[in-house]
Image (cartoon, rainbow, N blue to C red; front, side, top):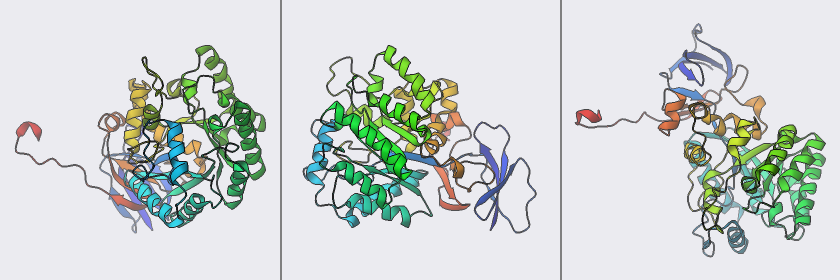
Length: 418
């Protein structure tokens, strides 16, 4: 099947392009392409066309559990959220987890997401969440790419045998090694969990994604150990530090020194703006910290950083709907990344940067030879897309429409509103 998409507005390019797609692959991108006789011609009408949104950090096994009996998080803190989940997860079934996860995936996909990295709580000898998400990864692979993290929500060592459960999850097919060092009983156990994470990643050739220093404690410093070990093993580009909230509370002298290691290690960062602005700073009076990592400084230093949804109505966060444009809007405000240049490049934080984090650059992007996966935004420029929080008009995967939407039409008799 041959398709020619015309009047395509690509990010950072003034002239409209054509994209020739054959058998789901981008064959050519140019200003003018001779139309093959058998081609279906599709006019994108000059709307901004970008690679699909990436959500590199979400917990699909937790979605829509916030109202579950016993799950209410009264303090709004990370640690009560973990406690409430621990107390209410025993009755999970694979089918129930799959049903909720599918509802979450649907919300993300209708907002333009085609790539998802989800954490699966493996501090469960039955591996209920892991089994459900591994099944969905396979069942939905034609319409959405899913990576699964073996995540010990209650700790590798705080939960007895948690390290063994993580390793078994990797054998079962999880894509990434996870950890939560700041939740371990003592700093030494947190450090032990980082060593174990790197060891397992090397042993099984897996990616790493650690819930790292998700706390306001400026002395929580597992990030430097993770960076050092991944650098020494030569796997920095396959390593991700999620949250790293304490890095935003650390003193500048320490941060300045650490930035050199972070750049050398080439690790990736994920910030979750909506969740961490909600969870962090709970023990502060005033001034009250934002709770996010140093996104702006990391970005300025050319260290890969991206945004993620994290939660949809679970014990940690009551809202969330999978709309990455909303996440981006919150993020650039909270992180004060709103120069005109930053605004024009803001979409990178929910597209190409997330793809780099997921280590899928070979299959991702609007480039010749890659799968014809992209979304069309209801905007004619990068600035307008951000300013108007533009929705999507289409999501295309392997050259076929996953969904289409009509541009917004306002009906009114008031002249000034037309």
